[in-house]
Image 1 (tube, rainbow, N blue to C red):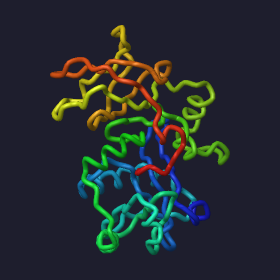
Image 2: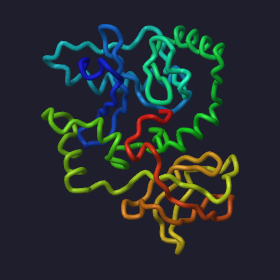
Image 3: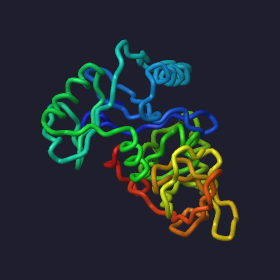
Length: 269
């Protein structure tokens, strides 16, 4: 793994025997070690983040039989520092991608680096602004668009996180069947509403139908007029739909593509 991530962090997926996602991670080179940053909801509490790490550790340890690998949880918390803007690319010791920076750092170091960037003119985004950018980019949140992103969008860039040549691994047969026989039943889509969704609307009850009322799927994330949804594969094309929510009149909407669906790793992740 280390030679693969020497130049830049890489996306990697861990799944169970049924092919369902256990964890979606970014692998970072951290000195002599490899750090696995687990994808989770934004602004996750430290205790919940530690619980996610312990679950991944428990899932991987039974398969460490002959490899010289030790899985440990960090003794100090880590944070991901990410920013947009070409002016940030000169920041020391931060991985730069076109249009921004991203780096996994110990929490204390991340705080110092953030303060230095803000002193140089960078602005911290609010949780709402960050959520809006995530949705606009089309990046799935495992807590909302899951629980099984492999079944939702088995294509770039998540497709690039899957090896088709390295031999057997847990869940390989299921994943190969999904890809080779086009068995993915649902896909992630962008949703653009005609009007902003009021705050307090429960997304768990938001349905997406065609203009004739036939159920296509559900709305999973929404911020203002922009949303993400999970719909039947045949319906996952740019088209007019209707979004139904409790306590809100049916709203016309459009399904649309997003940068992440096309393989772009540049948007805020």
